[in-house]
Image 1 (spheres, rainbow, N blue to C red):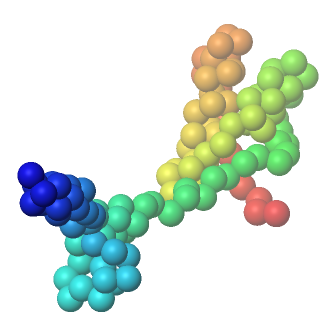
Image 2 (tube, rainbow, N blue to C red):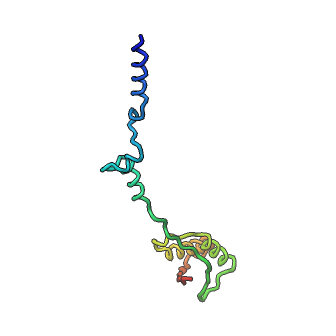
Image 3 (spheres, rainbow, N blue to C red):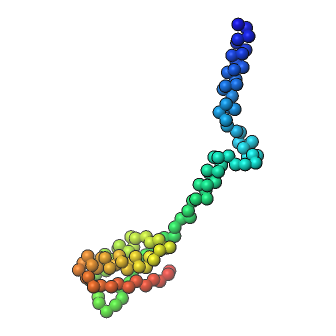
Length: 121
């Protein structure tokens, strides 16, 4: 029975040691010749991060042309355009025209064909 107690502690030390959990110390892991699976996953996630999209916002709206739209329609178009954000990589000028056309059609101007021009500030 005297030999059973040290044997028990020896077995307990073997099964509870960190090597049983298959973890490598960070110092040793940095010196490995090949990356671990966790490192490969971390690197892949870093490579897949997309850069933030550039967005366009409208600061002011000017109406030009022969037909003078009512002030309420101009205010509604201006408010919608200023609240919107457009992706710079798309045809955002066409999106502005479509938003203005939609507002005009909602108010009964079905043949209106607004044309947007931009001025970079």
